[in-house]
Length: 167
Image (cartoon, rainbow, N blue to C red):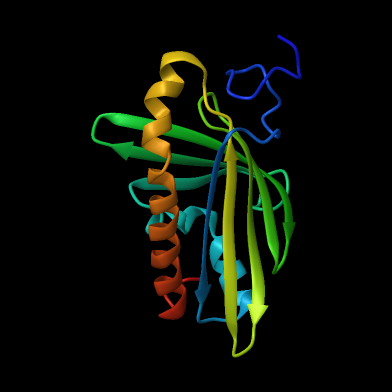
């Protein structure tokens, strides 16, 4: 299959290429940027704040080149996400690429320091959705649900950071 195949066709397009499924969530955390960033890259602890998801570092030290696996389960439905860490620029930005068979596409978390030891975080993902029936089934589950899911996750994350549970 050609490397420049249109997004949304499984296994054909470069996973680093943005897809049509785009999700963004953001909020302000009442904590300094260094703490917020450190908490976010605690890969093995992301399951504490991402709903219905177990996350683990599969290879590497959590920095660039590392592989992270996130498994989300809703009843009998299980979605396994493989995430390659592309760049870590502490304490401001993490770039990743979802490389799994279903979820593919780039993502970024940005932390912006604010006055008063507060941090604005933005979590943005561009997913390539599978074509055909799989895409038709996944699309309503991911959009707009993932916007709500991302926002819920960030609220949980903020609460854990603000109360000192993370990092």
